[in-house]
Amino acid sequence: MDLALLYALGGMLALLVAGAFFSGSETALTTVSRGRMHQMEKDGSRAAAKVNRLVANRERVIGAVLLGNTFINILASSLATSLLDTHFGPRAVAISTGLMTVIILIFVEVLPKTLAIARTDVVALRLATPLLVVVTILAPIVAAVQWLVWRVLFLFGVRLDNEEESAEAAHNEIRGSVALHHQEGNVEREHRDMIGGILDLRELQVADVVLHRTNMTSVDIDLPPQEILAAITDSHHTRLPLWRGEPENIVGVLHTKHLAQALLENKGDINKIDIAALASPPWFVPDTTTLEEQLEAFRERRSHFALVVDEYGVLMGLVTLEDILGEIFGELPDELQADERPDVRKRPDGSYLVDGTMPVRDLNRELDWGLPDDGATTIAGLVIQEAGTIPEVGQRFTFFGFKFEVLRRQRNQVTALRIVPPARTEEYPEG
Image 1 (cartoon, rainbow, N blue to C red):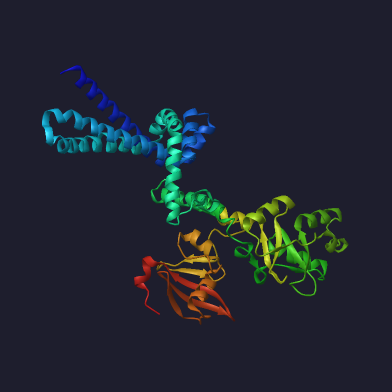
Image 2: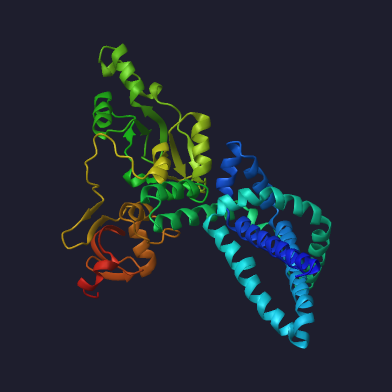
């Protein structure tokens, strides 16, 4: 074998290795976790910092990889054809095409890409430095190619936008990743719900978690002090709104700690205490405030309690810091609350008795259901919304694979429902 042939075979081998380098780099950098690389960079990894530099401009990286890979594969195929031409003549093109297709497919494309998928982080960190050098060298050519590509796409109405960098896209990516890991068994349901709750704070409004005024405990400030004290003791709440004239006319909010301090100072004589003077001014917030904004407002005011009004200034109810934290961590029971939730109870037949005022989001979290919560807030509101009417007691409906039966109704409010989840609908007759 002469020296020229050895040089040619060595050159072909080097080209195939370079092609494998580009193929593996492309797969590793398109599948690597940006979040994991970011954390590794914070921990001091220089290779991770280079990976992040490359991933930050994937269009330029992909352009450089494709340019190098295409050039190398064509050059290797041409060189193989030239070598075979002296031995096989006119058949060299066909033989070279078949041979190089097999070699490039297995050793230049499939093998390095499979390795990059199996060891994504390792491959990305190892190849980051040489790939960064190649990308820098080919940057002028890649820039010209990108300019030409976008000019062509512009003719077909394609515009460059930053959709992938939007906050909404980032939140959806996190939510989708957590849901995927939960399905694979790597993330607990509670952790999935907590992360989803944090992401939902900027989408949910105070109106979605408000305690309606009909369920709100408040006290008439004009009652005798003994009756006010008895009402406060029976309520088990730390803060109570005080009203005058009518329940919607809130004139103050009484903190039980302040009342206890006043009782100590007056040796337990409630008649010597001016309860109105102990109350703090009410803080009203609009129902359209997002939970993220309200949480920040609670932090700034160092307060845990606010009254909610609609666009006309009419009292809707109240919201507390606990309500917002409940969207993240689920319901936070206090010491006086029973172990079993009173608003949802499982029956022996697998159905559930649910209070009509229970929020759909809480029900989904409690039972891991998927009822839609983007319209109605409560489960009764969802049934009314889907039925298109206020149902009567005993009426049955089927929505979203669930079966609903109205058990109780007070005036125009559905107060109790029986719900059969999809797994047991075959045991429940159609209504």
